[in-house]
Amino acid sequence: MSTLTALARAQALAAGVAQPIATVRHLHLTERPLVLVPLTMAGEANAPLAMLVGTEPEHARLVIVPQPRDRQQRLDFVTTLGTALLPYLGAHRGVSESVPIDRGRDVRYRYADAPQVLVPNSAGITFLRLLGRNNRFRRTDGDYPVDASVPLVGCWLTWFAERAEHPASSLLVAMTDALGLHWATGQSGVEDLNLAALLGWIDPPAGTSGAVAAAEAEDPSTWPPAGPTTDPEFDNEVLSPAMAAYQAAVAADDEPARKRAHATLAAALRGQLEPTWRLMWRGLSLLRGLPPGARVAARWEADRDAFTDYATYRDEGGQPQPRRDGAVAAAQRLHRLERALSAYAVQRAYDDPLVMADHRLTGEAFVGEVTLADPARVDDSGKRPVLRPRIMLVTTDPILFQPGTGLSSPTRPSQKAKVVFVTPTGDGSKTEVVLELSGGMGRGLTAPPGTVPEVGERLCYTTLTDGYVPPGAFPSREETPWTHGGPPTEM
Image (cartoon, rainbow, N blue to C red; front, side, top):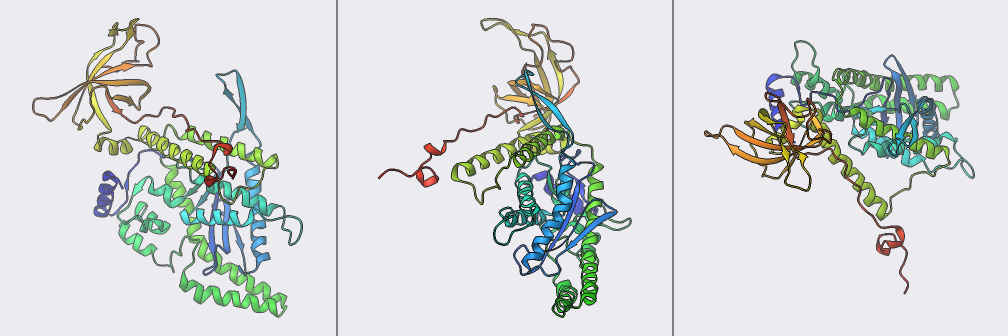
C-alpha cells in the first residue's frame, strides 16, 4: 500500500465515505459485458452449484446444479453455460479492422471488438480457471463422451483466466479489484473483498456513513456472500433440505415432486445470487462515471489482438492449453507478465495525476512551473549542430535527481529531457531545475511553435518511461539443460 493510499484510507474512515485514489478509469468497459455470478458447493472442490449469467441487468439467466456431486449434472451445467458464453464470443467476431504493420507496407486484421467478462471478486476468477482446467481435456468420443461445447468452454475459460493475470487486461475483471483500483475505503484490504461492504463505503445510502453501510452489508440475511462460496447458515437451513427433497423425489421417481423440489431449490439459489447481481451492475455504473484514461484504448487494442489470435488458433484446430508450462515457457510467461506490470504502472501514472503523486513522494517525479525558456539554443559541440533547448522549472517537490538523469513528461511523451543543474533556492523551500530537451521538435534548428514548453507552463517530469522495452532472450528447447525440460544428455 502506498503512502497516499494509506492516507486516503484514513481520510475515508474520518469522512465516513470512500475517497478517490484515481481521477480517471484505468480499465476498459464494453457496452455489453457478460456478467457471471457463480456459486459452488461447500466441501466439494470447485463443484458448481449455480450461476447467474447475462448481459443486461433486467435479464439474468439462472443455471443450477441440483446435485453437484453428480458428474453428468456438472457437465450439463458447463453445456448450458456454453449456450450463453459461446454465442456471446461469436457476436464479437463479425467485424474486423485492418491494422497497418511494417511501417505501413502491410496490414493485419483483428476483430473490431472483444468480449468482456465480469465476476464479483478474484475468487470468481479462480472458479473459472478451475472450471476451465476441469473441462478443457474432456473427450467428445470414446468412453463417456461429452457434448462438443464442453471442452471448448473449458479452453475459453482457461484463456480468460490466463489473460486476467495480465495487469493491463480488461477481458476478465473482478469487480472488487476494479473498484478498489479507483477508491480507498476505511476498512482493510481483506474486508474490501466483500463486494457489498466495498460498495457500502463507495456509494452509501443517503444519510448513512460508509462504516454503517459496510457493517450492514456483512449481514448474510440481507446481503448474501458474493460467491463463489455460500453462507454456512444458508447451507444448513435452506440448501441442504432443498437438495435432500430433490434427491428423494428423484429416488422415488416422482416427477411432479421432482419439479416442485427443483423449483424450490432454484428459487433459493436465485435469492442468494440476485443481491450480488444488482451490486455488479451498480459497481459497473460507478465505474462508467469515470472518464477513461488516455492509454486505456491502447491496452484494449492489445486485448483485441489477443482475442483475435486465440479465436484464430481455435478455428485452426488448436490444442487445449497444457496442464503446466515447461521451464522455458514458464520463464517466458513470467517475463511477459513482469514487462506488462511495469508498463501498466507507468501508463497509470502518465494518465492520472493522483497515481503520479505517489511517485512524486518517492522522488521519481516532480511538478514545477517553467520560469525560463531558451527555445533557440543550439548545441554545436558535436560533429554537427543540433537543436537542444533548455528550460528552468521551479518546484517545491523534493528533488533526488542528479545531473545527467534522463526524464520524460506525461504531456510530452515523445520529448526527452536531461537534468543539467539542480539548485536549491536561498531558503531551501524551492528548487530550480534546468533541463535540456531533445526530440519532438522536428529535424531543423528551429523549434516549431508549441514544441518547447513556455514560461508559466506547469509540467511534470519523471524517470518513469513509457518507451518500448525489448523482450528477453530465452534458449530453444535444444539448448535448454535436461534438468529444465531440454533433451536428455548422452551417457
